[in-house]
Length: 142
Image 1 (cartoon, helix red, strand yellow):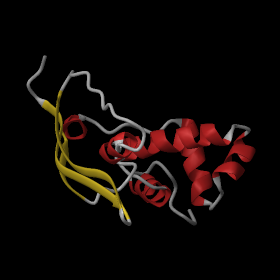
Image 2 (cartoon, helix red, strand yellow):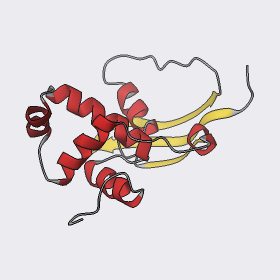
Image 3 (cartoon, one colour):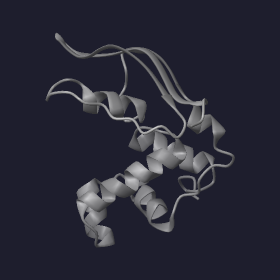
Image 4 (tube, helix red, strand yellow):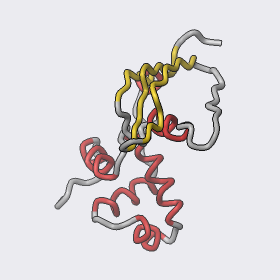
């Protein structure tokens, strides 16, 4: 097994008003290591994974996702991911995008999450602006 770190987290915290969902996790995961987070409902497992994946904001953490830094080249959006982002840029909802492309709303969400990962963003607005900056979507008015 590799001794290189894929993930290093120190002091991961997430609080929702008065409820602490994640209360200060320190974590090292080696490259190639199989890792699981176990605990009862409400223990913060999903919140932790979503924060590490960039889908939820953390309150305080010193985290390093080494694997993202090692990617030799950026991933290109698929044709369908580009179509979905073009419709997002036009202001359509997920349901409207699904209707337009004849796919389910769940499939729209899947394409969006994959595009977010490839673009290194966590929301629709950032996805559209990053795709435009990278030349994968046309600029508005062009």
